[in-house]
Length: 358
Image 1 (cartoon, one colour):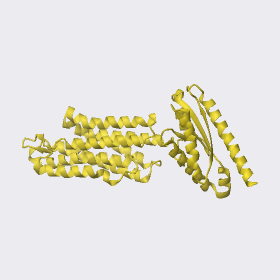
Image 2 (cartoon, rainbow, N blue to C red):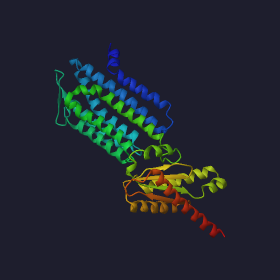
Image 3 (cartoon, one colour):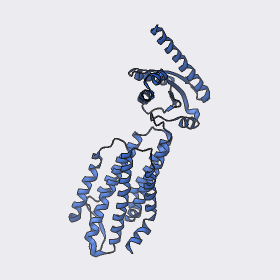
Image 4 (spheres, helix red, strand yellow):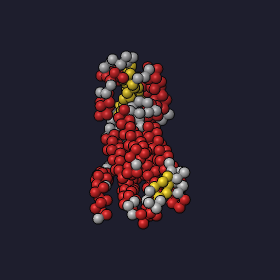
């Protein structure tokens, strides 16, 4: 029975997709539109698996040569659409025009059905590449390269975020190379490969979200302790930052205003570090920036930039830093020094504010 044969061949894929869909039901960490795009991605992978199965099924039925030709054109067209959907789903701020190359390839593939410009299937059911036979692989390669580049651009450049990028690069590189190594049979495991890769990325994303502070998007206290335990000898400096006057804001304007203040200054920190250094919210209005393999001049410039950006808002903060030229100074000592400088600056701030009030 055809249905039974499909299930047997795609059982692993079905389980992965069902597990993926089930996980999305209880996901509260991702935006609704991202979840909906992931559901669309699951549906696309499932439909593509049906197309691939049908194409291979009709490969043994020469009388259905034309139907198989359309199915092959559909498979060639669906693959770049699928990767474009992955980019559209996991890379923020992507627009619909990411699908334009896939749309153009679909037009060429459909033209190929009567012309054979991309491929043709002869009377013996053998497939032959046309003059543009490598075009589908080129478009897929283009999308794979774009996906990897965008993931790198939108990552924090940390070691942990390199792992899914390397994983994706391996999975999609296999999708380009394997057809030339093992033949068209790779198409039968392509959907499973993509489903597993995206599901692994989804799990990684959820784990990463649990390391972030929900209010500011900065890394949280648990992430701070975990990160400073790894390669502490590479840590050149710690920067301690504390908001000024948050208690007054909370007492006079309410905690919503306080949350707005915290989020605003957190945005200033992110603009100042420009993804070079991780920023952690370790308390209500307490923040730490960890600087690895950097000079003291760069750290001083960073503190000046933070003061400059926060100064453009209605809020203010106090900053202190500690530096270790050889990386041998213990983390606790670095933090004590940076906190001491920060509190000294805070006392000076309140002293000057009191003098102005008088």
